[in-house]
Image 1 (cartoon, rainbow over the protein chains, first blue to last red):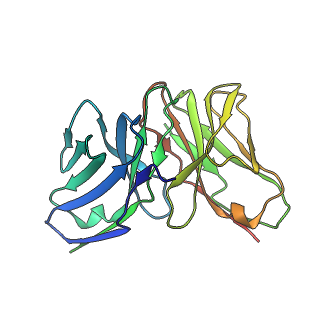
Image 2 (tube, rainbow over the protein chains, first blue to last red):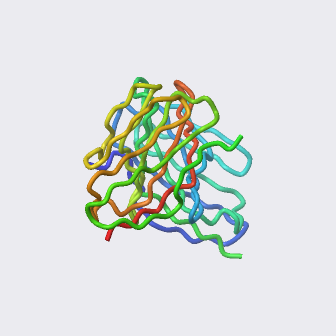
Length: 113
Length: 112
């Protein structure tokens, strides 16, 4: 049973345009959501997060939006750059779970120059 | 700070062999985790630890064992390796009560 779903395996966008990566979850207990970025042959690195008490969090070119009623979050990258090409994982956790995270399958983003 | 380090980077095992994947962190994090990532899949939690001497099972613990004798080290033991354990293994750590986990570079294991 996949509790965190990233239904699109890949996304290709032109440099300078917006990238929108989507994530859905099923577990209502999740109260914290994160995005990780992963380059080949490296470990995932933390990108941005959002608590369930917020609906938006911004950090430079990256913005995460949370729609709790729809159990949906999205990562917006504006403007997209070739160096953003990587696999992006959505992850979720909840209070009292020893900071354990549940990960989605990931989306491969390709930014074309 | 080296962060989270993992050794070895690559390993090929024969079926039935055993090995230990090493993980160490120098950030004084109490919480540590072992994940595996299969092709096209997300990361699945194998075991985790909330402090020295305390370990617990994650989502996919069968075929693995862990120990946590110090805050810094969290080795993962594979006994009787099977082809189904072919995967990339990641170790991660975090401070208490935070969610942002720091990951090591991974160990790519092939069992043939």
